[in-house]
Image 1: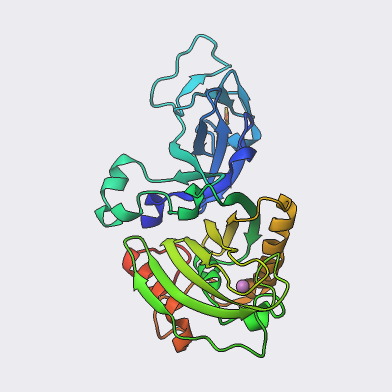
Image 2: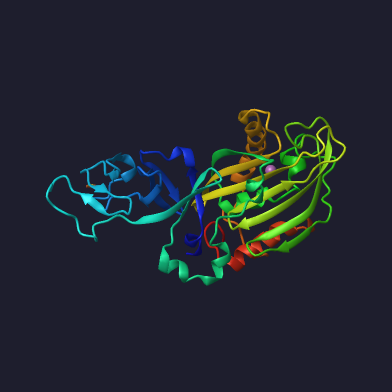
Length: 335
Ligand code: FES
Ligand code: CO
């Protein structure tokens, strides 16, 4: 499965401490823990002895200890202690499967494929890196996360919702849109090395951000940066009380099962004054408007056959996203 070769977010970095944390990625239960050197370790969440959940255990002497018979596993996954046999040295075959992890954007990222499986998919070379988020490196923008949200929808449905402006006047009436201004001007879509880019996306928004005092015309760019990641950049508004306001929001999704997802937003904003909670509240309000509609969509998988659902010219970004998923060979969360 090609999805196994991609990096996926699985937890907030600060949640992973010297106690095991159970998560699920692509139907696979995983246990995360932080070793004494501060490195995040990721194993299959199943003890190779009798199948107990390792995430119910604890970290003991820098090793992950199973809750059932106390077998201990070193950071490589190697079993280093069998308490029932104190003088026994477990052989290399006595181990639990370990995966690669890295930290970025305040999140822990994991990929399930290992060496050989990775080299088997050269077409995915462009996607071998973490999804890009350009605003992360901009010192003039403050970064914070919002989430997680556990959503009963597939990751691609959630990405597509994020790319879609024509729902603003209905789902986000009075916030990002109004029923009196629902027309979508033509915008440009192009493919990139890692996804799809839409530019010149314009909307009149009653309350486009936390500081809006009146309706403003805003211009966005939307970029799909990986199959389950996207970035929205709001270009500076003119003629508002906060001219020069700009922000970038990344959507990072953990595909938990084909029909459920865990969602984070990474906000990069020019506002260094408002408390975190206030910035998160705006995003939270918007996403809580999206969530019930997202969870109502049928089928839960995103249909890649262009004949499966109907499209309008306003949907050209979503159509481009579907073509991109098809070309990537993605199978999880699509149909
Ligand atoms: Fe894990 Fe026995 S099931 S030590
Ligand atoms: Co929405």
